[in-house]
Length: 509
Image (cartoon, rainbow, N blue to C red; front, side, top):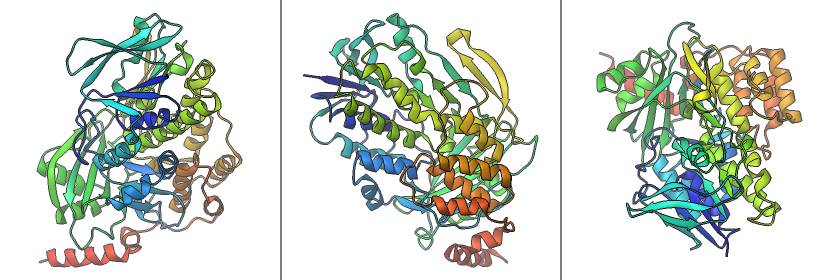
């Protein structure tokens, strides 16, 4: 009888458990909190109330893991928006034009996403979930992990034997300390601070606009030396919008009613503020500050056999990039591949497992660090590398908000080749990636249309099934087009444009 134990019952944890259920006789998920009844925020997830989107590559990975899940999300009210065909995106240079590609995002509340995924992942009877159970440490030594110590609902510690322990406890993972306690040595860490803060609120959408609204992303302008401010508005289930305001140091969004509205009104374009004014606020304005990009290099450590780390516990990027859930899904797929290739849980699996999982997160890490390290007039953040007290510290420039708004030829070139610090193995770019980088270097992002192509390309670089690569390549090699005005950009969505005209006309004395 083989048993796998997953520490953490969030998105990454339940996907790992679903995979392990195919290869182990028994799977136990150790969850420190209690799952909510229904699609509501999970108590132990700091990001529960904020914007969550699943981009194309992540949606494809999720569907491969749990067929029918994307359809179930849409049936429960999640929204699918093409990028940039169904999105209004204001970059530092101007407004994107609409362009049809296979790139897309799925937007819904995190509560709905977790509820749908959890039900589909844990059905079948093989996976046992121990809620209100706290992981206390690893059992074993530097050579082999044989289980975990846990406390169930405050009871005395007990031992749980396991052939494989997977840590999916997120950013607050205690794995480095647990490993040190059994003599496994230090785990190297790297962190890149963003200086970014954001605040989020749900709204009840006007009934005549809910279905027609595109995703909206307002990115910071080219204002060196000033805080970078931006906003996103995504439609979610049950006729609601989730609005997130972002700002770097000195420009953090306030959490009081008047300040929140004034911040949105002071952005480069009043679109989000106009929409907020016509919607009904639901609940509190919720702040979030933990946007540091943090990586623990478990793949470099002398990791004991029988132990692996997945999700944010290993690589956690600034949530504004919307990579986390997609990377978790891709890592779960890779776990399945490795288990299949090595014949299940056993000695052949362990030596290369952590490196294989790290490879799936590599591109996300490099893109996030490069974007948040680019000078965008947003002030200076801090970075630190090393292990524990021996970490080195310094400063790097930080960026404002959103990968699309910070696209640049140099940034992409370095995102593929490395961050300037030799902190991970190089991954050879495929032919399409090399073409993108070459064309970007030639074009120097001279129009928002080219930037739109880059944004779609970045979304799809990790998606081998993409079908729109010729279209993106055409855009990257095409002639620059004039920038769009705000009126022209909104006019690309006739329903939204007509709605705004009618509301603004009514409001005019």
